[in-house]
Image (cartoon, rainbow, N blue to C red; front, side, top):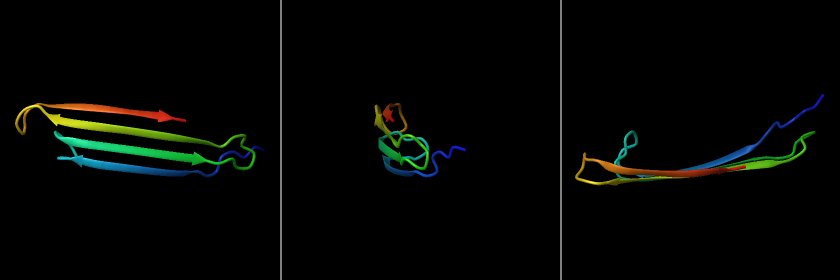
Length: 77
């Protein structure tokens, strides 16, 4: 019988400076997260993951008009 990973830990952070949570038209958002899974019992390796992302919202005209939205992010294991 082989017993694998049983436990891990995660951590996350989110910053939201937009004008509307549902449909933002100005402001920015940042989010990041990390997870770690140690070597437990018969598992061969410990490993971790990390993620990060951001969004930027820029109004092009007056309020209620068109806006530019840009989003970028990445993951690493």
